[in-house]
Image (tube, rainbow, N blue to C red; front, side, top):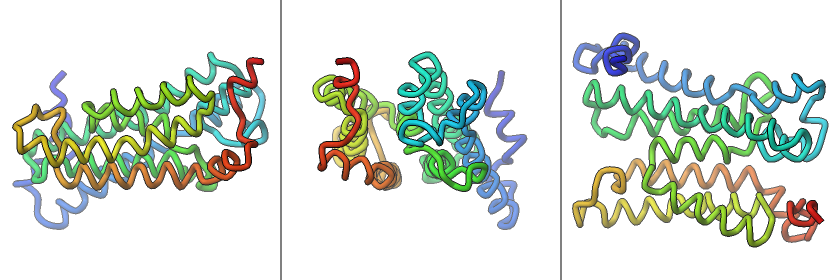
Length: 238
């Protein structure tokens, strides 16, 4: 299937757009990414199992709480859907950027990334009370910052298997994103690195904003970590 041709049908080439139509194309991209991100997978899975996931565990609709309340199978399904909510809008936006030659090239993907993350965290269907953005951020990273993904997931795995805290692992993984993208930005062009491990200023800004949003959404977890009351998967196994 020719994705570029399909995307040009939905969002026409920039050269053929007058200012109002050009603005409309960007609005469609932003709104579309938000609504994809806002799909409440955790809530709907909970309803399929006969519960309101917001009334159980931490009250969050994300994959971690679904694992705690409903088990790994349902948690894995929620993670996969939330991951795709971040990956799909970014990939579609990037393909559109390639098809119509937008400058900077990263702009559509950057907009799609932020809107999908906001949609996940603040879905209009659930009074703007959504997840904390980790699974959706993972999809965004794979789509927009593939070179940073090994560093983010690697740091997440090390912290999780060392401490048992999903929240702490998520905070470290989120913090690793702008640090890694900053290295790509400052050294990628200087040493002619491949495109998948290079970044521009806009990519770095998006990575920084993503990390800030994720850390802010975990402020309650930070407080519980400091108080020693944060749920721990290791202690649960015991």
